[in-house]
Image (tube, rainbow, N blue to C red; front, side, top):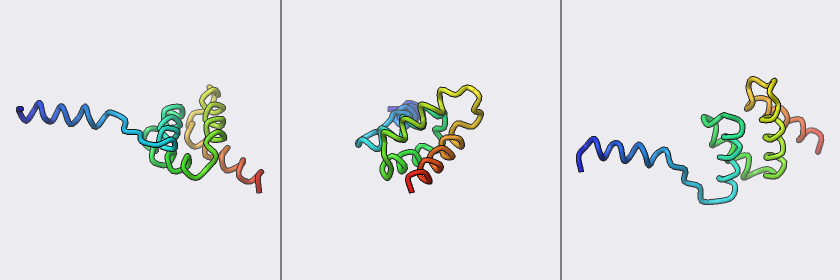
Length: 87
């Protein structure tokens, strides 16, 4: 195998998703829904520590709102408000 072929193989493998548990799947789904793949690890951590159904509901609400420019920030704001309401 040539260096270029091997490098290309590594690049392809790096782009593939390696999801092993439910919270990882939910976190990756949240990142895709919010167009915020740079913060995938944050969404995975949130999915691990919070109610996944609530997170998905909030993400659906945010992604359906066309007026939102920064979906990730708006999602975090809604999550923060929902946590205040529960307290």
